Length: 106
Image (cartoon, rainbow, N blue to C red; front, side):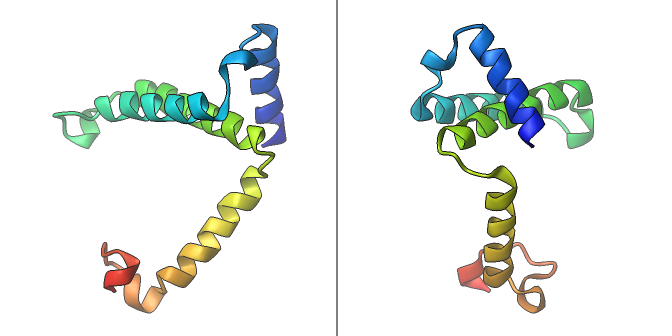
């Protein structure tokens, strides 16, 4: 993770783009890029989406998410593992397996 974040920061700083990367705008950028990812699937069977374009848009989502995490000094690995742990408590296997209901409906 550190190698990825360092590369993103180097790329950003070489272009003097940090001035545009405040938390609000990074969060907005994640949403915009997620919308572009969704557009690849719009009105299509999922198998019809172009994998190369999916890869590009997913990389954009990850990039802005990593930069936002860096702004808050979050450890990406730690926050994801914490979220998995919290979700495991909210969605116990015996109640959630094979079920798409929200935790408060299980």
